[in-house]
Length: 503
Image 1 (cartoon, helix red, strand yellow):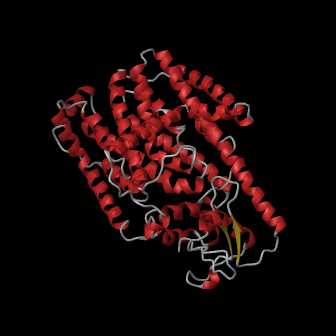
Image 2 (spheres, one colour):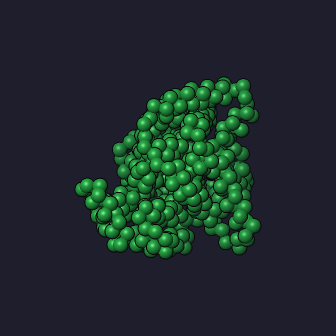
Image 3 (cartoon, helix red, strand yellow):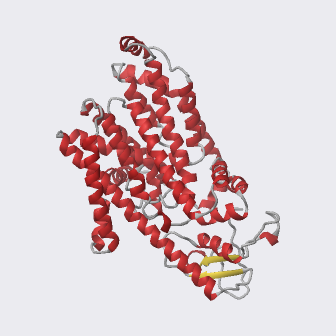
């Protein structure tokens, strides 16, 4: 909890809404939580109920959502820790370190886009992590019922000879898988990680590759059915055309071996290696800037406290190699698998941009990979502890650095809103503001359309979705993106401007 607050919470009062947060917050305020269900029906129909539930509980106030984001990240790391401890119960230290690295994972910079990403990714991700954990718990409950350790050992020896028992943990794991994979396609490709997690548990009793494979498949098949059902649903849903509203085009060009190798190499390099030290490269560009100095100061203090904390821990751990090798292999698989959805959609993996949100599906794999690699390469326990402390501290520093990027973005937004209110206090309805672009990073013209309507039409009420009088009275349009398109065909006199938003 302390690491969560230090990494993400130090500038919370100075952060706000960003990117899609703004139209979503406007929708919750003026159309009501129930509007999210029809709004997402043609895009991600299982996501609408999640938005509807959370917006029914939390008002569209930036501070509330930023605090909620802290709570969600804390629940997420507890979920990851729970899952890893069920898979590797004899490696408490390694699973704790992997969980802390998961918490501060520096490749994902979008934490502060809270309204959007809590609903769109983090809640489904928590369901998926818990599903991994309850799958492992179900296997261990089936193989080690209550009784003496001798009795448990006998049952464990027999457990590989019978199929998976559908106990309550299994049912819960299946339900959580459905809740994790159907709302969003971010995690559609990581299900094979469960097969590998089951393999780790089965390997404790089964011997021989063939026996391990068969026993693992016996226990994975119920999850495989749900995964395949989701795949069939996506294949159908993406053919009905509505998803084109996101301007996503599935890659259809032939995939050459060279391109495939480059893509795999790029994602392993970025998610497995570079992101853990990228703050050093970023900060070196402005070494004397106040934010850089504060980042380095916080990183140094965090390192000292984490070393003190790790030295005081008394956690059990089995042989390093028994954890390291599976963690490396599963981590690499998780990194590559996590890249598949965004790669298939033709989207880039650009760090320190809104596109690094795709890293969320690689977080667990990357954390396992780096812990496994260090466990394998470094034998001295004290040196290992220092390396882990450095990585965790660098992750904290990276997220603090990111927090200040969003703090400055929110300050710029407020300046723009203030200038509009002061210079155009009585803007008439049915006005479109045109500009090439604005000097701001995360917000688009559609993002700004929401707060402008919030400011100038605070009493807006929609009488009917089909009523022309219910149209938004204001819009901001970037000519850089819209000029010459269907929204703004030209700048000629009397040109009709049409800006459809959602529906």
